[in-house]
Image 1 (cartoon, rainbow, N blue to C red):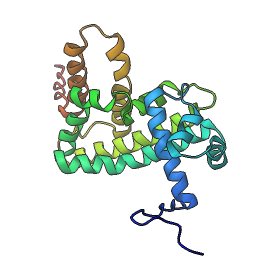
Image 2: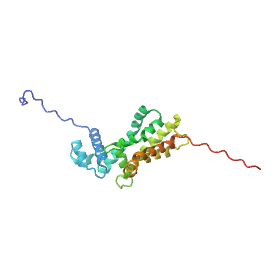
Image 3: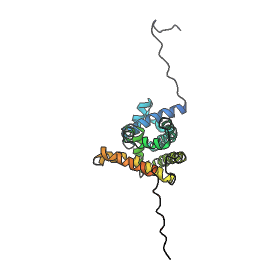
Image 4: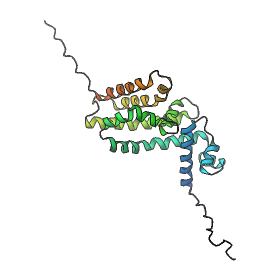
Length: 221
């Protein structure tokens, strides 16, 4: 059969067929963007499908439900936090300095802007009691807390974080401060002045040594 392609015209490129794993990752990438931008409840599977370039049934064939897709997104993000913290540690040095960076107001605002991963985790925190999305949100919070507890232990080994601080309790303190930032940004008076003080208090609780105990007074016989 003669070649019908006109001279000077390139034949249309064939679209590369994705493997099942690649398709799943492309869906997770798109879903992460959609959930982070509009939130879990407002997100539409049709929007995820449009970003991937597939039909909506393909999304459900891969993940089964919107809740299951949200769970997979949170699980992937939570699992990647360790690598993200390691990358930040390379830039900011000791664990105490890294904690100061994480708690810093500028860092918090950028990480919680609409469409960011921080916004997605804040959305998950707000969904803890949701019947369908609550369990994956709780799982993501527990994974994050484990990574933060490891960071606290590292700081204790370095000497920059109080040795008497319980790493698990410290991790949940940090997670509570971080996850409540959107609430404070929306409702707290004088946010620009008070937010740095909130971060400073949390950091001081972990990095300042406990005051020495007063010596016991001996009673005279």
